[in-house]
Image (cartoon, rainbow, N blue to C red; front, side, top):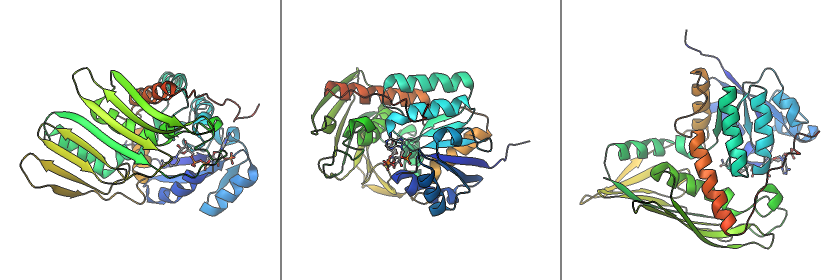
Length: 335
Ligand SMILES: NC(=O)c1ccc[n+]([C@@H]2O[C@H](COP(=O)([O-])OP(=O)(O)OC[C@H]3O[C@@H](n4cnc5c(N)ncnc54)[C@H](OP(=O)(O)O)[C@@H]3O)[C@@H](O)[C@H]2O)c1
């Protein structure tokens, strides 16, 4: 008998992204958002009321131990992902962990090993890879439409007013352009080209010591390369291009949630392909998690844990080169 169960979700971290995505659960077949957890019972209740969610908890541990839940979507800042995901996996709950997966490479490796040992589903919420545009890109590359893929270029910048208490500028919240925006750029390059052999970066820091802007060159032994520009000091279009020996694919702004792509085959006129996503684009990742859980699988082949660790290594290596050292926060579950 095929598994047709409804996946019951809980959200850990009632912040901005959780608010933005909660409504998209309504577009996911066989899924229900039934609980939310916070460090504060009032904030959890307010979030539950805003989104019509049944149960709210004033601690992350209570959320994780709710026996009715199948999956936890972790939407706290990056340094709190590890402690919450570890506890959830140990409680047998599937986890979908916001990007960046963890604050450190050791944290990402630990979660990968734990999920595999416990045979519990775990995935980084790299929603971009599940969008129809990226399904199309994978198919075009596999068909050889643009020949042998040699180069990737992409940019992503936001003009964020400097505020040392803002998550993006606060080192304790895993701030910086690399972990927040660079993750999309690096994940894009890693998806298309794999893990690089060389990582070179130039950039500058905000007064709080987090990276504020960067230019990143990923080099491959066979001469392939990716050039990636990111910033929280200035906006930039957010476009991407994949170049092969037989043409190129443009992913128009913003490349991490596009609704169309443009393919230019050598010697031919560009062809635009419509790739409209569901809702705000988030449902696709929740659909993926549900399908994998129902199939009894513990990883997604599209955002596998090896990919996530490879991306994390690039990000942390690049941050270290700029003098930025990230750390995990083990205090979020309380004592
Ligand atoms: N997929 C996307 O498009 C997207 C977009 C934006 C952000 N994100 C990711 O989502 C995560 C959260 O980002 P956000 O912008 O939603 O953050 P946010 O608005 O600051 O919300 C984070 C939530 O985490 C909880 N939290 C737990 N421990 C915390 C701590 N020590 N410090 C601060 N907050 C803590 C807070 O809830 P309580 O205080 O109530 O516990 C807060 O509501 C990040 O990893 C980010 O990269 C993804």
